[in-house]
Image (tube, rainbow, N blue to C red):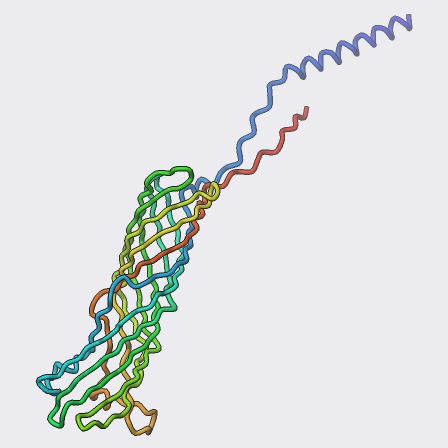
Length: 302
């Protein structure tokens, strides 16, 4: 009787275990793991940075303000000229943020600094006054810099083997600085006497409308990084010196006075807008293009 009870209990235990195993096999499969959320809010946005060099695309035309010939006191044959005027190449760098609207249209806003450039010109004034002709020769030198803010729009023209040609245009504002300007001069009178003249100019700055035309190539370095080689024609506007401070000829005081500037300060300004041929190397980082990390392996627990 005892053996029968033991066999019965063993059979019941085996049937119970078999039932539990079958029930486990009938459980529904676990839900699929959701992919890690991508940075959807950043999709299409990018950051950019560029470095490059800009060389003159136009020849500067200069004026004196006020014009020393306007009063008509220097004689009927008085004349003046600026000679060998030039602005040297400038280094540049910018940063910006932009948005890729679709595969062929994007836009960005950039803030740029340009510096390291130099300006020079030789100014000659001939004044046939009653005592004979007097000639003034002044050699101007200064440093230049600019801060440029632009809103840019680009058309991407298709991608071939990871290379995307593009064209673009931009418009904005520039602040152009002419600083550290010196005037090394010489005066020669009709009698042949000569003497030094000149002085220096205070720093000057002007605000201008700026605009640009661009073209170049984008190279896909990775899923979210592009290398950009570009050319840009940039119209910067105008430059102006600050007020003149002229040698007083006596060495007294500071050695400079307005009296020898004709009684009031004068300014040297560009009369035409200046432009630059810019060659740039840039990096573009697409913020929403990072690949999400791989999901962790699923472990089923019952």
